[in-house]
Length: 415
Image 1 (cartoon, helix red, strand yellow):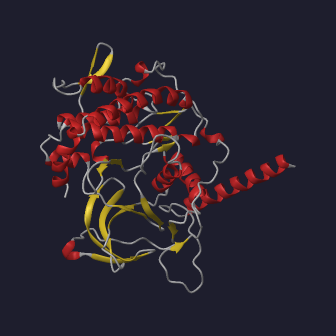
Image 2 (tube, rainbow, N blue to C red; image 1 turned 45 degrees about the horizontal axis):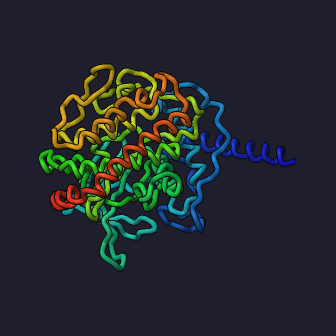
């Protein structure tokens, strides 16, 4: 009887998933079926009520995701992953859905030409300017109006077509904060809004990226700051991998510096990320897009990869923090290395083994090239991540001034 009941639940889940796929096909650009608006209401977004967010249990493994290799940007794969993600978070209290079109923020918005809009649960938001723009999304600076306290600066990430993916990944990570080494939360999304033609993520606003800090300080942020931010990146990557998440796009302009004291480096932009729990253990990925030096060696050579992309991304950030430019590597003595040398007063006993691991994880961890097993590989790389993390922690604990002194300059340039 229990077996029959379980089979019935699985059939219901599959029927729900098939309905979501049909809705996606019938509404191009929409991230999923919106909840019906109650008769007589004119609200632009409808709150989905739930007392407490809880990530839904993963469905049985998909028979369609048993291939050995996937292109992570394949449209059919992304549609399947997205509709699965929506099924897991559609009852989240901070998720809002609407059948109407999006906010329609004009292209030319500035402090002199600010835009006022209504968005639940904030009431009136004032959009002051565009902070940045990517291939699929634009980010705007906004603030709450008349909220009874000092107006809080927010960032609105507007993506077209609508997508639930980044919201899902961050909620999964925040829900698993007690699992792994992560002691501080990843990027916090206040709310997500799914419209017919676009999605909007309301997030904390940060004053700059690692790349901004390097540029404003003419490439001289100091080794202590580089070690401190590298520690944050190692902790974040260790936690992501422990919880089955690949970021797949770690680079200096995707690392924000927190507003309070500049003491924390926070990874952003999870649009390309992957949830390994949706695949079988031996899966790997191949990139078919244009690559450059900020992409790992395997991507550039059209070889299969998993964890290599995130480790290489951390190495790229380290190179930029130390050398003030984008990463350059060379292949010498059978190993990938930084193409630029090390200053003799740098902590080479920390940097050299760390960078060797990040650029050559298979060799350092004795993982056969071309063989993939996510649980096994995570266990082996985890030991290396822990060792390097502890080495940096020990050095910073014993030498607090290497951080405190240059940190004042960081705060000044990122005001």
